[in-house]
Image (cartoon, rainbow, N blue to C red):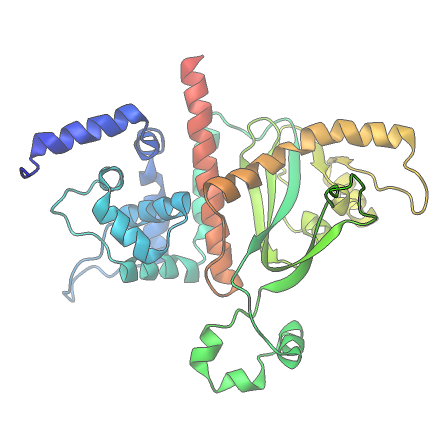
Length: 359
């Protein structure tokens, strides 16, 4: 087998381009340099006067997090694939002889951003890029939430009671290694799903309730371009409707309509939206022990056509990115979900730019 030369690598990269390298499209469309000021501010690296090996470029490291999020990779798998894949190296601007960050370096970089709570600033930075490109929040907004799984915890009833009360179980306090592996913020909840028709053709009398452990991702997208504009991370047991009043509504949207399912229908939310100048398009609930009135049923059906668009966002994140929280604690979960929201907006940006170029 002959040794690969420079032109052999160039030929292989050209073939990757011809096959449709998504990362190359990212490099061509997204200006990752816009993140540099926020990254440098959050990382607060030393000036190098004390010596030591200089850190990797923060934009390169952030692009590694983008690769991780796109492909649902662990830190160890990320290190291996950067060394293995030419498309990853090209996206990062690395040559075959360049030093590649190891798994520990990737973890430390993400951890520093997490502790600096930089993900909100990075999300807002890219949102500003979208607005500057002409993608303003328009035509109203759609709210929804989805459950995001985390590794299950095996705790006793007493430990669960302490966690719900906001206390650290006594047995954990003198065991720092055990405490570091215990997620004190994720919660159990019930995930309801429609019952499927049985083999004999009959339908079960009730829907299915499946226990679920983890977190919940709350988002608001604009109706026109379907970018995520506002978002929040909570434990899985948090009430969806109450989050509406906690910064999920985007006041910069050019229209006042707000679409959401019945979980967001409450007097407190309706009063809040009216005071803030929003027009509620939230689904109405079925009257207790009464059939749904025909006009409300028809109104809800019309709203569902619009509201269902937000489900495509969650489907993209879970099917394409494999959204899952591997880490411990809500701060790290917020970082994971925030990265997924940024990467979704980047993918959506690529899609809309491609349509615009072909029009």
